[in-house]
Amino acid sequence: MKRLFALLKPTCLGLALFAGPGLAAPVAELVAERAEQEYGPAMPSNGTFSVRMPGGLPTEGEFIQEFWVDQDSGQFIANLVTPQGNIRRIQGLAVLTVPVPVVNRRIQPDEIVAETDVETIDMPWARVHAFAITEVDHLAGMQVRRMLAPGRPVHRASVIPPIVVARGDRVTIELEFGPLRLSARGKAITDAHKGQEVRVVNLESNKTIVAVATADGVVEAQF
Image (cartoon, rainbow, N blue to C red; front, side, top):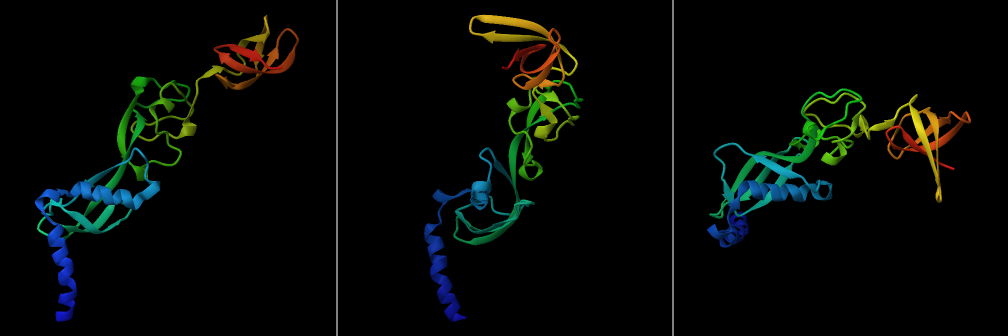
């Protein structure tokens, strides 16, 4: 026992030497820093940690000596070195959150998502699946394919760029060749958003061609 005390004594003395009011930091910040280290490269660049702990635990500390976190639940256990040089066991939740754009109302298929329909909320990273939209610009202005529920992450496949040419629509076929510009009447066989290829029947020649949708009811012939 005396030998064990002799081995521990230098460590405790070292902690006491490093401890001091000038180095104290909020425990939540210390926990967040260690949690970031645990996640490493897997942590999203815009992620932050929301740290919660039971009452009665220290609110400031020098540094964290040992740290363990369950990345699925956010539960953590750590050994905190207090400003007085003591070691305290602390525990709580360190939940990784990211800002996620969501809709604020139920939106039906074929509707266009307006900017006023979108708001950004902080959401636990564990609830944000790999195919969720994480940028506002990728949601506002898009056309809905599957119903969107308010307050929930939006799957990328649930929205598409707005359809400018729908199957069965009468369209104007345009062709530019140097200074020459021609147009003809056509009928779309497939749907297309702006910049997407679309199959069109030229109503004057009755031939099917491949064009690119450029605007509402307008396609550019490809030869």
